[in-house]
Structure formats: structure tokens, C-alpha cells
Image 1 (cartoon, rainbow, N blue to C red):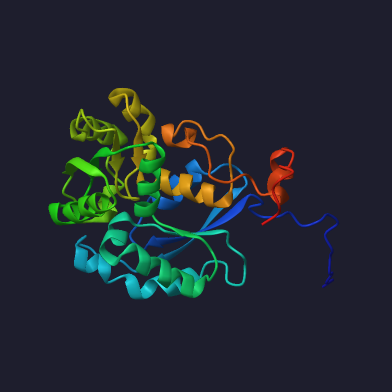
Image 2 (image 1 turned 120 degrees about the vertical axis):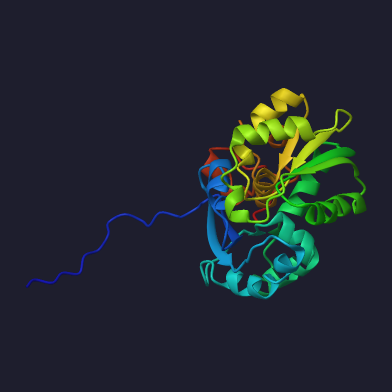
Length: 274
């Protein structure tokens, strides 16, 4: 037997040169990773760990996943720098609380920006200058009322909320995008500035363009908002098309100077590397 030690002749490629997103997904989630990979541009990658979640989808069961969030965040590429951390459950954020989730993730990833579907959705609604909104969810009434209260507490007028009554999030991903379109058109109040579609398990990103065309107004969904907000936190300002008017909103920050060359763009002379 001949044994050889070979060497590569080319420099190692940089993995995810435009950004590494860490996603804490639910153990029962079929959809978040696939949805986010549709939404992120080339060069931005999502790396996932999972936190234990149990059905039925009640506020009590959603709160019960909190102790596992820090450990899940620790398992994503240990020792490797991540640019943004995402907790991928809208109803879980409502049940556990946004600040607590951020604290739990930062125990594992100090100094890394953190977002979640509720925060990202609220920021997306504000970016679109919405004041009066309608909500569509796959949830039951108790979770819906808590979600509506979160938006109301942040200054929005919730004109209507409609739920599909699912208690098992493993089934939610199976809802046809065509049924999401029909439900959205039925659920959105004519006086609403936009429709927010909640739940990372819903394949809403596949339906947004059609819903906006039918309603004639913007649509914000959980995964779409996560992608948009995390790209803002990265400082990415490239063009994303096909996933709703939200991506037409300008980023709050310029592309970091040390990443500009990767998009073949000249760095802003007034921007220093981050």
C-alpha cells in the first residue's frame, strides 16, 4: 500500500463571503432553511441548529423551548465568526419574549446582532410606513390574540386577524401556496396598509408576489422579513427581486468597505471597514 500526503495548489475559498447567518430553527420546522436560501443572495449563507419543540402549538409549549436556545446557538459552527443570529419562530418569540430570546442567544454569541420574525416583521412594517395592518396566521385564537397584542403595543392598529387553526407546526408547511394566496385575500381588511403573514413554517415567500398583485398593497411575511432585516444588519444593499415590495426598501447601512469588492462595487470613501 502506498500512502501519500497531498497538498492543494490553490488558495482556500472563503465560505459565505457576504455573510454567515446562524439560524436557531425549531426541531419540528420543515421550511425555514429552504425559505431563507431562496431569499438570500449568492454569497450569503445560512447555517442551522435546532431547538427542541413540542406540539400542540400552545403558548405553554412554545415557552418550554427557551432553556434550549442558548445550547442550540452554541452548536452553529463553534469557534467560527457569525455575522447575524436568527431565532426562527414568530409564535415562539411572542410566547418567550423578544428580549429574553436575544439574551439567551447572546450568552452563546456575544456581540453578534440578533433578529427574529417578530422584530423583523415590525421593522418591515415600519419601513413600509404601515400604520393599520391585517394579520394572517396558521395559529389558533389564543396565539393570534398574543400576536395582535405585540403589534398593538408597538403602535400599530390591527384591523383584523385571521388564523387557519393549526396546532401542529409540522403540518403547516404542507399548506399550499395557492391556499395562502386565497386566505390572504380573504383576511386582509380593505383599509389595511399591508398584510403581515406570520409563521416561519408557512411557505409564504412563494405566494408574496401573487398576493401583492391581488391586494394591490405590500405583504410582509416572517421569513421574508428575517431575510430583509438580517441583510440590513449585514449592510447588504444589493437588489433582491421577486419576493415583495419590502426588498425595495433601502438598507439602513452601506455595504462594508471590506466586502464591496465582492459585489464589484467601489467602496464608499466615507465608509470604514467594520
